[in-house]
Amino acid sequence: MIKNIILDFGDVFINLDKEVIFREIPKWGGNGLTRELMALNENYEVGSISSEEFINQLQSAYPRASAVQIKAVWNAMLLDFPDERLEFIEALAQENQYRLFLLSNTNALHIPYVERIMGTQKYLRFKNSFEQFYLSHEIHLRKPNAEIFQFVLEENDLLAKETFFVDDTLENTEAAEKLGIHTWNLKVGQEDILQLKSKLQDALSST
Image 1 (cartoon, rainbow, N blue to C red):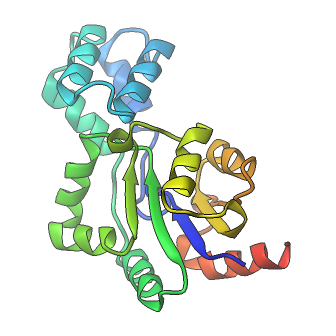
Image 2 (image 1 turned 90 degrees about the vertical axis):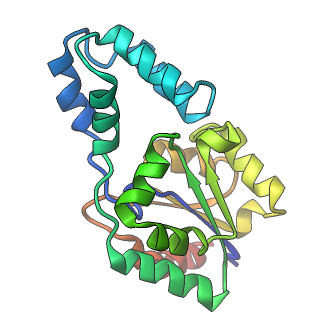
């Protein structure tokens, strides 16, 4: 029996353009998005460095880019949040059949921007649909590390076999599966979170 649902944010609720950084960074010169810069982003996503330090290090790597340009490009990946998805999660919360949790790899630049593009009222409606709203930079853990899933399970007294996790990144759902969590690797552009109930039924029938 599924009692708990853990949901990703990006490309599950809010649409993303994940390629914008790869398109824009070459315009700044440098060596593209190197391993060092990927590691920098991961450190930023777990709150190990501040937004100011993150931007300063990017400026060191790409001196032709201003702080304003860096912020703009980093936030440009965040697109629209369809109203039907907000209404869906609100309705699911009101049914009170499942305990709902959000679990997102994100950063301190993205969340204020999301609130701005959604509008504070809609953002709070979304946030209040969840029992817990876990953001990687606030809890200092990120997917796909097993520790982040164990943290959510243990902090909320959840059993893995009673928990369903939705994420658009296969690496993340595979990590959750290793802990015994049921998963749905949502295929962006082919599937939508609005199909959640049918996916839950599929999970139940396979157990």
